[in-house]
Length: 304
Image (cartoon, rainbow, N blue to C red):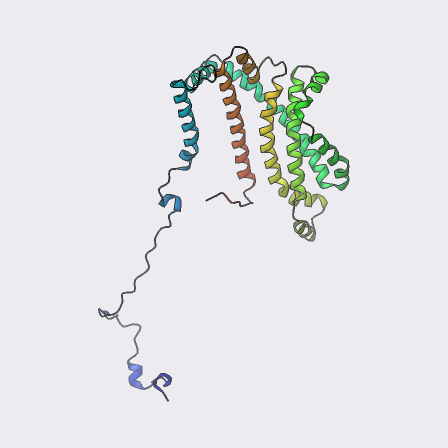
């Protein structure tokens, strides 16, 4: 028998050579490696290790650089003030409009028009999408008509709205409602029809009835589509407001722009455009916050 396959020695001498658990450990020799616990190294994100600037700084660097170039071009005469006022003049005009209360009053009136139009258009678009998405009969009766109306440029309906509703607040609100309804209809309808069929079958197997499936499966599955449609609707609402306030408006941000156009006040026009942009950005941030709150159950990729 070879040495590698020899049986273990079970003699008393060998037993006496075994290590007693209660005995104190003897110091190891210098040749024995020192087995210590591994050292834990904290994990640092790649962006931090590379020393990149904060995200808020990166997001504001582009607009600040654009403003700086704009101011330099105006200062050195490359951009004439009659063509486009410099940022310093625009800031001064905005401060004057805020100081005398003109701009806050116009913003409040425009916000009211957008809110009422978005409420009416959103309710109509969502209701039609539910009827068309949950029922084949509703789809046959509603979807074809909505798709035909969707292809008609809603801005081209302004003359008809003026004939039907006059030149008061009604055509402005109707234009906003029409522009927002189609986005919510399309996205909510697509969200309902995009629900996984296996989830419907699983809900039926668990004993959910028709309305139980709609409440617990279909509507939560269509919620991401609703939020996407709401973001598109808000963007369209501000665009429709610009056209709507051109219909004989006597108040609002569009009214300020029309007055500034008559007197060639490019600084006031840019102030109004900046207010439109800020209001739209604020509305988009509100919708994003709602998405994070209502769609916590849906993990998504947020970039690297």
